[in-house]
Length: 250
Image (cartoon, rainbow, N blue to C red; front, side, top):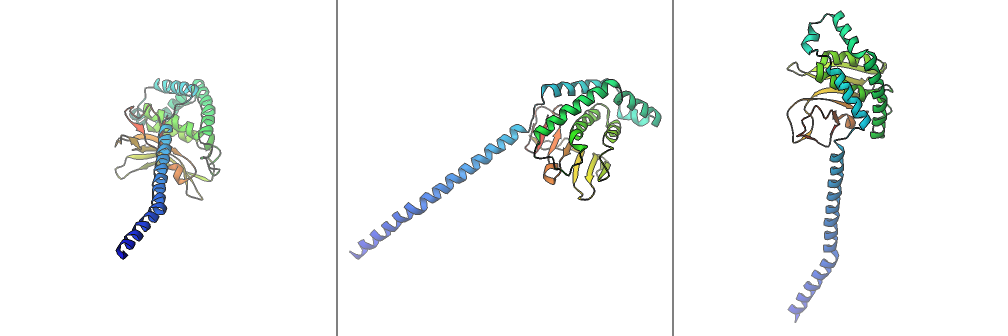
């Protein structure tokens, strides 16, 4: 009889445990599954937005600029062999023509609006006003110039376009790795905070599948987190690669 009562007590305790603890465990598991699903959904959204289609008008302008730059068949070696006077004349021929200046002005205006809509909460106040409307557009033109003709003429273009960033910003040119290879054509750093706000880099970028190839790209932002994001031209990266969550191709 006593043994039967003990067995009954154990059974009742098990029922009580099952009715109180196990539902909570199940709920926690369900909550965890829901949370993981939400993370996966959000990650999927980020991945989907990592490759952005430019508006038709912007894409057409970018194609026009690319075609325009492609008309000038100078190479890096050609620029290196020119005298300063010859180089300046070629620069004026390419970047100070009425055709290019009109293309550039329209492109900067439309791209600035596109960037403003795309990154409403990401551009920090600390970034120099001159960088907000033109840096991303300038960076993209510079990338096209590098691909078409090399870094020397692209550096000249960047110097002319970003010379008005202001006294609070330091411009660092042609950073190299230990092998002497340029890894950053330009870095713009806020002098007081030491925060980098813009870079045009050459190196690997996060892609799916991964790649050890180096691609020209740029970074823009007012925080360390923002500056970890990579932006490049879709035309530079082979179509077999898709951007990872911290890379944007368009």
